[in-house]
Image 1 (cartoon, one colour):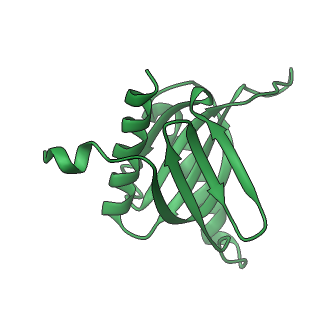
Image 2 (cartoon, rainbow, N blue to C red):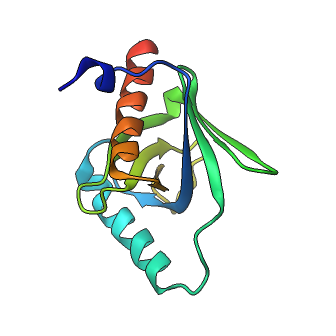
Image 3 (cartoon, rainbow, N blue to C red):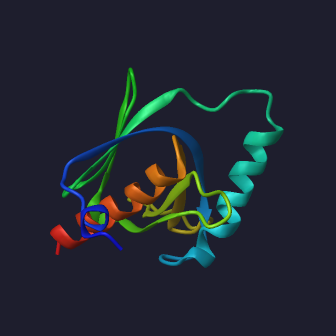
Amino acid sequence: MDEDIRYQRLPQSFSVRELGSSEARGLWGIKHTRKPVDLMVAKAKSSSTPLQPQVELRITEDGCEIIGDKFKKVFPIHTVSYGVQDLVYTRVFCMIVVKEQISADRKPFDCVAFVCESRQAARNLTYTLATAFQVGI
């Protein structure tokens, strides 16, 4: 693999549509993103409501920021445990986030997913998040 693709400069911004979030059963691994992504994609396909407008997903050494017209949501890097391009829906990038506040009736992890402009963009997002993890060590 090309070094220039794997190790991205930070910060990097990507234009994405937020697919949603769903409870994840584990902290790390594609086995914990499969079901949540399948559920979010099925919900999006069955809904007559289009996906959210495009937002900027910005990856920095400090974490991930979702920046919309009237909002900004921040996931500090220490709360992001995993990020990957989905193997089935290759334009989907998802990440597992550890919730700051945990309730007794829910798992402490959420899978947050985004639809990227292309498969390559989803792959680059994965590499960029990996760079952020490396820089944060």
